[in-house]
Length: 89
Length: 101
Length: 90
Length: 104
Image (cartoon, rainbow over all chains, first blue to last red):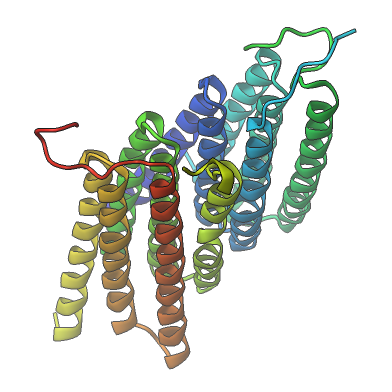
């Protein structure tokens, strides 16, 4: 009984991580993929906590949830502006 | 099964998923996402295997901390390259690959 | 008491897994962004509970960073992805 | 079980309930504005209950202040995000839900 709760937490995080990764790679909507990747970074931070690595959780929280999310969303907004396709070689 | 080994196996599966996405998609932003997922899988394997024997090995932790920072800078650089390609050519894929998928 | 903290953390993880359905389904982009915002708040709560349950006080600092950067993604979304230029508004 | 433990348990249960209500509201409500309402109010209340429950068992005053700071920051972040999303939704001409008869 004493071990079941951490085990449940670990397996829940692992399953959710794999599911989010699969959805990120298989969805057709670009914005949805980016948003799922932000949530993926958030859950990675929660996984580092369980591996006795609070320093990694801190780095992942600052970078994965904050910086990468803003960068990717900015790129998606840039791609929404339509441009005339040029000739391809 | 110890928790570290469990997370290492999750990391291997994540790496395989990311590799599949990297091969399958032609869109460059999706490739960047798949690349990041591959990197996260690698980090999980490293830190998960550093836990064996009840003693935490600090060297993989330092490596992964550096790896996270390098991954975000590489992502930023790749995004800039992709945006420049989009401005120049209007496409988000490399030449020679089909547009949609 | 530690057991209760862990049980609540597992419950909140289940909430996150259920909220993912809104990201997958959400009709507009704003619905998806709101779900991500919810995960930020839930993540702060999970981190605080685990800090107490595992006796790792450094996790409170992680929660602080989470709370600090929670709004960043939403602001980037509203300003860069989901905005309309002033001349488009009738 | 003394009084503080009992109070902490009750507050933790209330926090879990509010988080569940917020998630259910996100999943069940019909449009952006109502979902925003469920999220920003209910989840900050849930986080508040959890924070107060942890404050009751905190070791030092510094920890109490840090927990309060985390809650204040979360409130501020959600308020900002809620305002921005609602404002932007209004500029996109998204109509508020008028009731079950008109449009679901």
